[in-house]
Length: 219
Image (cartoon, rainbow, N blue to C red; front, side, top):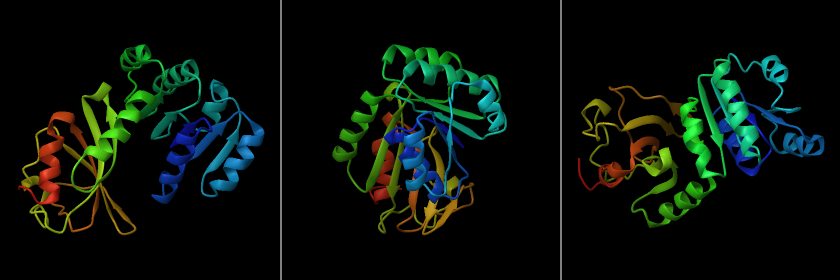
């Protein structure tokens, strides 16, 4: 995964990916900032350079990278490089923009997900008003869809049930199961165990039902 920018969200993302054992590169144009980031992220390759330079991006392998995250402090840079990444064949592209009117543009050029500070604030609020053991939440598609991370309750009736029989809402996707130090990309026959951390992609309208399923409210 390649990350553009040395912002707080960039550093946090790189740290999480490193913990999951995913090879990550972070590009930042400020040399002094690069040195500090490199000290705090020993498992991440930190590159000092202009991330809007197509030659640099190519030399660092953007054409074959699985994911690209543009989270600089400049909307125009994020938009430009997200466009370049998609054009060069990056599989998944995520971009941060402050201006809401840029979101439709990013969608039209094929960006897979857009991060907006207003949505991030909304996510933080929702995290506190949600029931059960949801530990983080992010809004996608201007609030129509959500990514939630939760801890499975020992009382959940979904435990030991194959995912293909879990009766989850139709458009719900279990993206990953984190079990102790293991990250599992689940298939239909995989089962969930108590205290698993689950990454779920779902429509906002389905979140309450999903909470009940994982918190023991229904099966």
